[in-house]
Image 1: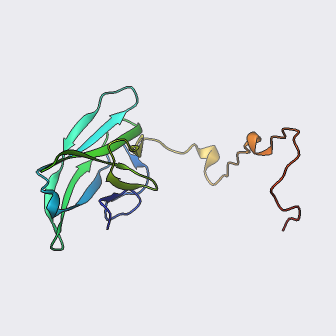
Image 2: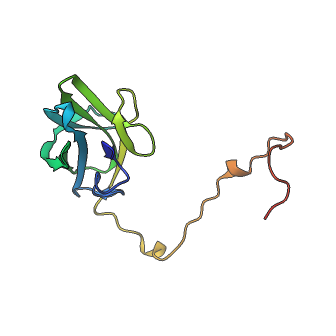
Length: 155
């Protein structure tokens, strides 16, 4: 069991980009032994200050864990970065991304990302049913140096 997992719908209701105004439920599962007295979602957009949202206690998870959750929505499109702050018996703790979308206690970890797009966005008619392919030129870059460490035969 994780404290938070941004790639699991038990913790993050929608594991995808969301439209403006669309609500996403975020949930933490905390050990009761932490004696958490308050949990907060800390959200920021680029070049904007952090905004704290209070989470609410949402019941027990078994005998020794508890749920804290909230419903978040954004009114403007963009990239939103977030982590969690907890008030515990030991002071303030932070839950951040420690890799692969897993949230754990890490004051210096990275933030999670939520992409929000304009709810009024529509695909242009000329593109409907189409396919876009992008070639990354750096993939084919030739430095002029002899290549080593790869199999010479190809499948």
